[in-house]
Image (cartoon, rainbow, N blue to C red):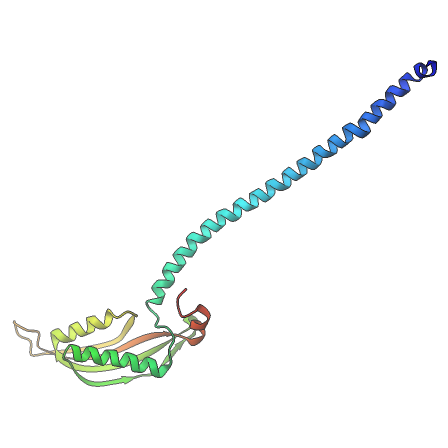
Length: 194
């Protein structure tokens, strides 16, 4: 016991070192690891919140883009073969001419123009007609109200025989433009609509 009393100072230093080595150091290491984990989790949380905020903004932008694409889908005719397009559109115009009791003098397709920056082709159809002015004006209005945009690149109208009671006779020449998606565009976008 005497020896223990003599070495009590050394034993207390040894006990203190033991406590530091096996209790205090692990607690400090655990605390540092926990702080590092918390910091990493905070960074991940920040990134997740940023992605969620960007996703909400992207969803809003996506909605706006889809609305604009639907407007474009109403302008451009989905891809179809040249023969089918010409036959279909010419028949529609001829049917409208009959519906409004207008005489068709001449109808013919002009040169096709490729517009690569928009991935479309422009087909031009020249229509020469004559009839009552009221019917001709209604015919032109009806063309402009078709499901797909039809451009009027040239319009020449001549009125004759006007009186106070009626507009008289109208002779006209129209060059109608149809804008058709290219085959590649349609295949990529899934039929011209998104």
